[in-house]
Length: 445
Ligand SMILES: Nc1ncnc2c1ncn2[C@@H]1O[C@H](COP(=O)(O)OP(=O)(O)OP(=O)(O)O)[C@@H](O)[C@H]1O
Image (tube, rainbow, N blue to C red; front, top):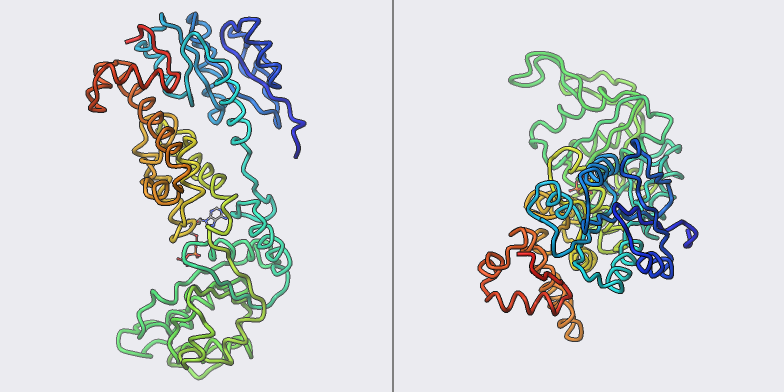
């Protein structure tokens, strides 16, 4: 990838010459947006690193409209806001922009902090890697690249695959990808959770039954396997299959035939079987709970889905994808994650893996008030508290403090008295904190 892409700031308003020069020294090309231009007039190209600057120091109505247009056209674009002491933050069109901005700078602009912030953004807004030919699988960590290579290898081979991995690691996603990449892709795919089937109905659910096979069997019914003829059947929690169903499955794998419950007639059937387990199937075999011959039949090809903590590099990409997907369907302010939240996402051990990440991001998107999701929104304060060693505790605290003050200032529309009340400190403390964190407010309240 390298650093060959252009780093560009689309600037709404009027940058000073010294600002342009300082940013150019840091590798940023400033393009002043023509607010009166038609849609797309700012010329954002794929591959460029682009940050939009909402210069609200002297913004007129036309500039504000231009900003709103760009925001609507490029919802993932990162925004920073520049304010002066005269900026009326309470005006709705201004407030919308400040809320959507990842950070804001008050005059006199601290150019060093601006350059640092831009640098962080440029590193952080890496586009998520999706493997275009492998549907549903996201991630560019070494662990996921290995998974993708196996998926490509295993998909065209008409043999069973045993998919292992902790709960929520994406075993079903992998099974679906195997089906989609296989010559069976236009035939049915059936996902069955063996652990969720009532024990007395497993046989009939999977293999079907004849009329009168048992009390309540009023009509003939085809099972999941027959319904997926020519396609793929994914058996999740295969270790939960009761012994009689294990025998039927073994026959299907060995002879390609099945018998409906209540019938002695063999039916020929062509399906590919994929199976998953999050328990140690070898142990189940050793303990006599799972047939050894069936285990060998299922375990011809083996795919291990890595735990999320083994692919820390993917966590942020996945989190951003989940947030973007949520934003498409719901009205929410959040568009990215605060620096501390990113750290927490990376450090957390994720016992529930990708499913837990998805749930936490969705919940955070609902509760977040500003443009950035905080550690508290993700309910990951503990990850930060327990993971940060002594040396970084001070740094963590400082960063959390800044997060809290910025968030509260936004929520209170920069009303210092209200902000002080909410944070249960004096007004003087708010001023001191603003100074400490270089949040220059002047007379904005
Ligand atoms: N690499 C990925 N990219 C995008 N989404 C993913 C990925 N892996 C998992 N998911 C999402 O995470 C959730 C859990 O995935 P999935 O159901 O496949 O896990 P599982 O390992 O089969 O879980 P369980 O063992 O509990 O059945 C799903 O919503 C899935 O869409």
